[in-house]
Length: 112
Length: 110
Image (cartoon, rainbow over all chains, first blue to last red; front, side, top):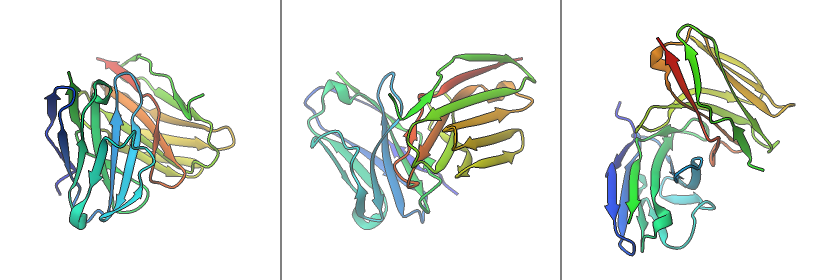
């Protein structure tokens, strides 16, 4: 069974540009989560989808971040416009129910 | 005060040693407790999951949760060089928005 996949693995963009991260969850997992780890800090929750609906987006830092999950399958996280402090590793996780979460390899975002 | 406190280490032990990793937390509503292992440049890999208090054993790994003390532990017996990684504790009240510790970097020396 394929695990959670994320694309791209690494992205380098300039401040002010737009970046879109993609996450493909494990097939059949209705729950999809986004997390972020910035340099020197712990992994922090961003938001939670159940199928295509946003269940909890309390961790989204500001309105420059937009997450979507059209059709309840893959999800995208768009950052527009990117700022220097957005640099970090963005993780996606999926779960069949509200407990164990399986993480993808992450996307390393560098904003210069 | 952080919701989840975890000593970042680094921790270095000889092969075969018993490793003890710990986290403390402040939110009494937490009832889902996880330990993840993360190798360099990889995503966190779920190692152990415990609901509420108690012990759970899986091979060389044992997870303990003491909700009265707000303290969780992961023990690794007969540690191997392949166990060298960063270990992250994570916990949640609902099972969804997990709160992570900073991670403890472990090195097991042959």
